Structure formats: structure tokens, C-alpha cells
Amino acid sequence: MPVPSMPGRPSRRLVRDDVFDGILGLILDGTLAPGERINDADVEAWLGASRTPVRDAIARLERKRLVEIVPQRYTRVAPLDTERLRQHLEVLRPMFLLAVEEATSRLTAEDKAVLRECRARLGSEATAQEILVVARTVGHVWIDRLANKHVSQLVHSLGFLVMLHFVQNPRELIGVETPTPLDRLVDAGINGNTEDALTAVDDLIDLLEERLVHGTNDASEG
Image (cartoon, rainbow, N blue to C red):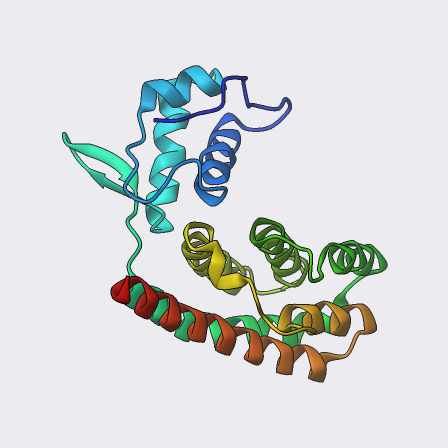
């Protein structure tokens, strides 16, 4: 299992949360690829954590369907399943639209400052990895303003799975005409325009679905 050589646990947080964030980060940045086995001892050594918080964090990742556990056999990053991702997008669309409709008017000055930073990072020179980081940050801005925490948790979980696909297939994010739906979503948030934000989310999900299909077809042709 590939893990960073330097200890990764920050101070003053619950250990299980540190472990969860650490493993999640390795999955989302592609260090741990789909199908990669996760070794408890490696995680314990990397984060300086005991077995219990490591197992708690891995169980939490399993509940989010990012990790598969087969007792007595293996723990591994969940393999990508294109059909399942399509189903997740079908559920994610109305949930994120709800988040945007409910939360756009609640965005704070601090939220809008974060969105302006994100906007500055987007552009024709942005790499796929940079786009993914911005997309995750933008999603958090709206989701964190949701009053309904059950919807918030569901959107987080589905978003992780969709993002994982594009981490492993970054070329699917390149070559999109500008301004992209993500650009327009960020601009709508900065301007507090709920209607424009809803349209941008719909277009963004359409784009992800299209890229998912085209990526699958390209892979099968190759």
C-alpha cells in the first residue's frame, strides 16, 4: 500500500477523523487506486494511530462505498463501476439542486471569498487535478450551508464517488468549452443568483454524464 513517507496526522483532532481524512485524501488524489489494498499496519505506522481508530475510519469509508471489506481476505479501494456512477449522478442531481436552491441565499462573505479564490484558479490553463480540487471546494461551500444535514451527508458521499471516477480518468475533464458550468456556478454563487446557480448545476451534471459515457466508450474502443 503506497502511503506518504512523512507522518500525516495533525494535532488537536479526533484520531479517527484524522485517519479518515488521510485515507480519503490518498484515494481522491489517486495515490490509492481502485482495487488497491489498504493495509492496517501501514496506515497505523503512517499516522501514528492505533488499530481501533484505523478500523473505525475504514468502516466509515466502506459505508460511503469508497472501500470494500471482505473479512479475512482483503480491504481495498472500491473498484470503479460506471453503471453505479450513472445511478449516483441520477441521485446527486436533485440533491445538489436542493442544496443550491436552499443555500445560495445563505452564502456568507467568507463563502464568496472562497468562491473568488476558486474562480481565479479556473481557466484554460487549469489541470484536471486543479479542476477536481476546485470542484470539491465549491461543492463544500453550498453543502456546508445546508440546514438539512442528512441531505448534506448524502451529497458528500455521492460526490466522493463521482470525484473518484474523474481522479482516475482526468482527461475527461479537459477540453470543455469556457465558461464551463463550474465557472458559471462559481459566478452565480459570488453574485448570489440562485436561478443561474441552478441552471449551472443542471448543465454540470449533464456534462459529467456525457463525459462518463464518452470515457467508457473510448476505453472500450481502445
